[in-house]
Length: 543
Image (cartoon, rainbow, N blue to C red; front, top):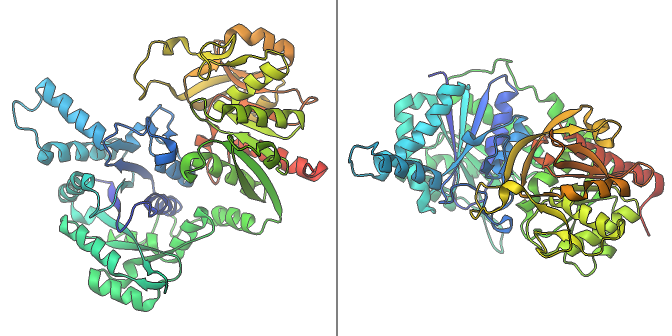
């Protein structure tokens, strides 16, 4: 088989940075001319991430083909500048469902269904199918969960153990991500927890080839010797991963510490097709951000701020745009239920309302949008941010005081946001929204068309509600511009205000944040940050 298999696991604690480690490795391999196909395997029993609360699990990342996936796929796309699909994420729930469906059809000819071989075979088949179909140089597989702590991880550990036997151990690299522990209050560093994690890994029949050690400071030669001795891993394959200011510095740091070199060496691959990593543009973008003197402050007006990963793609897309414009980014998280909301918005350069669900905090978003519109503060509304902007315009410009979305008020006298006709009567929550990439036709002479530079574009969606077609004519007469429509002109994809009424007031029903990457910022975010910088330069902040 052409494809080499790279398995990334984690130990000691969850949230250790496996996704960033995997995506950084992918970037280092791509920079050497190799092809990489990343897959994130999640041991939880949900069939996908679509029904999870963002405060508990972080955002749901959506692919072009409409898969609702783990947020780590966002890291992969942003780091690798590639577009993934539903094959790049699967869960225990989807595996169990597939096996039980086969059992119901009689595919197993009356056999007793067991974790081994039926569940483990299903896991292996999914990985092998991608390897055979896509034939990447590397299949980069991140196993979610924590080795030794999560019972759900065991079938996946057994599956990759068996897979290594099938494809040949010489074609596989096991990368285990652990953390250095620090004793409070002395702050003394300890290696025992990571040693125990490696022992748990060995207890599953797996032997790590490379250990990536997360740490808040350099771990030191003595600790490296100790880890090498007790974990039976050569010192050169213990890769130090010290905290950085930005996740985009991590590929550079891991390259310096020989991460990709050791991965290739363990596979007896001496060098990449280009001889060495070409990270010039990446390094240039990182340095430009670090040395930037301008600062742009964006208010992120939402209601899921209790979990920093709830809006991670939006935050990263803003960072990409700021780095492109050589400006430092400051995101001011504003709770839409805050009693001091308007006061918090007075010293920002721009306001962004991201996606979300439910009526909680909606009135605060509408007040914030009114503030942005009336004070000519650059505004960018995404999904819910478009819908709340339409409600605000209806109430305060068209004087439809009771206007609302039927999501928030089913009995509103002016349902300016309504449910899709195809969504009526649906009771299941998972996988039933308008999901994935949809085409929009951009209208001549609009700001949206100027930003994209094209007449037809595709953006990813995740929603149920739309601008009510019954109010389209009234909106246009009132001065709201539909910058983009669905091909049949029934659905509003983009809104904007005239240039003489507002310097930058844009909303989209889509989620453009999902298609932004570090090297290629999304044009909407780039234009938004540029408008914020121009406002800051020309008029300063509000007093």
